[in-house]
Length: 159
Image 1 (tube, helix red, strand yellow):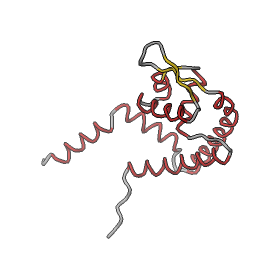
Image 2 (cartoon, one colour; image 1 turned 45 degrees about the vertical axis):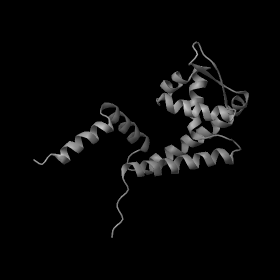
Image 3 (cartoon, one colour; image 1 turned 120 degrees about the vertical axis):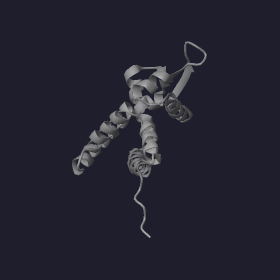
Image 4 (cartoon, one colour; image 1 turned 60 degrees about the vertical axis):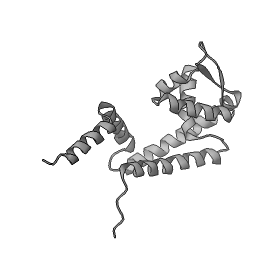
């Protein structure tokens, strides 16, 4: 019996595991208690200053729920603080002094990560970053759900 080829979801999870695990290990080796998923939040806060989770989500390009989960984890680890916003539902995210002190080291790690990504791109038949940008743009034009629904109709059409 032959082993089936991995599907898109399996390949994507494998890629994320290979990338994020190594990036997190590089942070740890540099003495930084940091996870790769925190970096977009840090970038947003560095650019915008104290701001709402909603605005972070928009800036980063993720759902409010995803941004909220990351911010909550960062808050538990003392990397950000949350203060009340203009209305009772809004929370404003602020970098803590601990995180602000880490910024130069985090920037060095990010530069090393970007250099490693460029090296990886150079080894591939097409740069991974370009393919990912193309895939995201294509899915924004027409969602994967719409593509699945169409394929399902095509597969169940007996003609």
